[in-house]
Length: 378
Image (cartoon, rainbow, N blue to C red; front, side, top):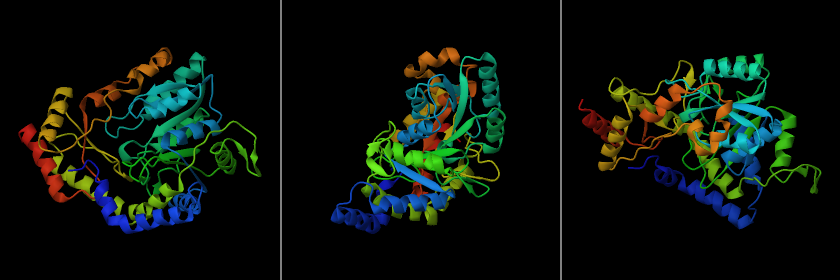
């Protein structure tokens, strides 16, 4: 059994993907080819924003967003304490200070009440300039943008939407990557929409931000003269071959994959609810299910179930074993933290992600469900 069955997806889309790759190789237009611009246009239309600028990976996408907003030394950026390392890493890389925010134990996303308390603390302390908040659409579910936007507007904060896992999710029909001043996603292979290597994208409605992004991704070049570099940028472009892979995958994603992965998630919930704590999707929200994550009673039970599943050939993953604030590289920022994140700590001890994806079969899910029930003796 595959944790996320990319092999089956390739079998289904093989003809289109192979044709696209062959076209790129035949034309030998490997960097910034026509398919990259086509993909950017289709991605922007899908999300419902004016601009999409692709780049080399999701981490670069976050870095580019921070660069566009001018985040730097003396600033702080509020990030959830339960997420992948790059969310805070990119803040630190720009010379700013990450401030870690607790999460909602039901949705796994940033807790707006904790955010507001932290912003007030930083403002009152006066040591750092509160610049931005990076939300994370974790495991496929958009964050609480109504509440977070209200806080951001009150305290004059930029919002960066980190939708590396959330692409395809929506709130009342409004798509992930459209809720912030600037938004990012990742095309890492295991993401809801993934390529066959690394890739990322940045989304915005702001024309000036888009122009800066175009410049920053190619060494800070002048739009009118590529040999005149007018700012310090980086080399971060999506390869044309990856665009050729992503175009048919985007079409399948929109046409049926999102529906199928949601059906798979519903099937898990129907059969596991009341046995373990299953993920919750608030009313009006729609998840793209990067992960299907259950919660156990404690770390011992979680680790025992993980071993039990492995014995039966069923892969599972722990996202995340350590909070961001527990990472060794983040120790220098702990004196700036307003409070400990107790809900995030509890999630790290009890979470377990089960196999899911649009190509998982009911027989495979039945095997997973049976193994969970067997271990818990229900």
